[in-house]
Amino acid sequence: MMLDQPLLDELDRRILNTLQADASHTNAELAELVHVSPPTCLRRVKQLTDGGVIERQVAIVDPAKVGARLTAIIEITLDVQAAERLDEFEVLVAQDAAVLQCYRVSPGPDFVLIVQVADMPAYHALAHRLFTAHANVRNVKAYFSTHRSKFDTRIAV
Image: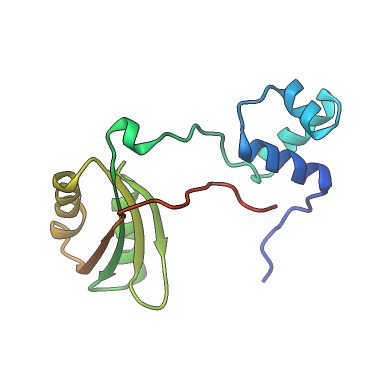
């Protein structure tokens, strides 16, 4: 079964690449950068947004400058992998602000999480909140970043 994938033309790709690099441009600036009229640019951005290609526009914050210096990549294996238990765990971690990303994976652990916290005591509090107190977590394996050599949010289009 094919998922709905919108057909993107060259203008859509230019708009997406420009917005991924800097979404703070005004419509007039964006139109000039991608070489179209402002009304055309505005219409295309609206179509990309309404079609779900553009999910949201955000500011990317430097974690160290807001006191979130510790990044952890965590593998989680649940004791019971029934669909409702997997869903239950996803809901639990989705509600925690320290969890930036959550992926169901296969094979191996059931989930991989990317979390950002202030320090090791904050990580221990998160581990207790999400893993120790949660009766269905069988195994937790955490990796702590010592250096971030690349971070990007752009998707090649």
